[in-house]
Image 1 (cartoon, rainbow, N blue to C red):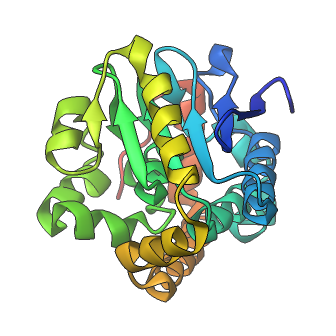
Image 2: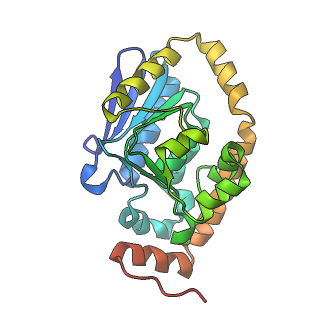
Length: 255
């Protein structure tokens, strides 16, 4: 677990969660989801940790779910998956979160950023949410949060057509705070996280809650997505699409 997710507490009250599976483009396994969830739970329980930074490897943030691992757990359903447990914790985490996105950010690699308070990207950052083309539905409350950020029409393009989003456009849409050279990216994210961690805790928490809006609505959307995701994951349509992706074969034409 320590090999694939590195948890480091650095100066300034910042917890750094680094995805470290470059040979698989930081695709997330159940064990990696568990490690990240536990790191967020510990941050919320700690008086010392004031902010969390998510980072990947140079040129790759995350390719999303490791589909082989994910399909191996599909028999238990999405509702019992480590992925959903992490997503629920992500949505309810009280500690401010910052993302440093370099390279690909696919699926949860992209929707995770919607829950972060600050997002910084390199010019190579490329966000993509290919849920529907895999026979699935959006997750992490992205069907609710993304239209709020970018409007329904653009969200439809990103979520239904899986349109890739380059760093500059993500910034223009308000999904990224700044686009920075790759060698400055993590330092900037940690510096800004430390600034958040140094603020008065009660005022920060109250202000953050006001900015983020109706938490109950976010969680309701997340749970509605989870039910639909579970249904789709069990469907022949999704199973065929996922198998085709894993074998790099062409899926059968839909009826």
